[in-house]
Length: 188
Image (cartoon, rainbow, N blue to C red; front, side, top):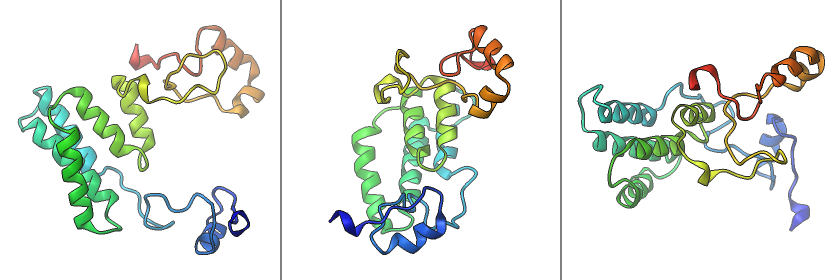
């Protein structure tokens, strides 16, 4: 029942930990094993996806499809590291048989995007900005009225910048520097 759940403020680790076993409806631990868990700089999955892309482009030798499958398997292993490893292996086998049957840049980047979401969202976003993959079919509606449905291509100006440096902020926007859809210099 509703009264059995106690929410906590986002980011309040102590309250979330105290409430976790008492029916909290807070954010919880997500894919991390605990609040003090280390965060990988680069996962094995990301490394395999990078190698698969390099092999596909002819930059290195290697079997691009085998590397792609290894990346998916490593992603499942990472996500199942707190649970039954055999379940993770079985889930990876089923997923690979259904979704990883051929290799293309789109297949590699899509699987990389899926693997990175939840543990390195900024890198997943950077991959989108670099390649345009995944496309618009995975996007939620924009919260900004009148804007097209798209993933922002650069970081928004902080509210503090908009309020304390209004003159320069307005000058940047006036030059077509739209905070949601203009491209970073290396994307042009």
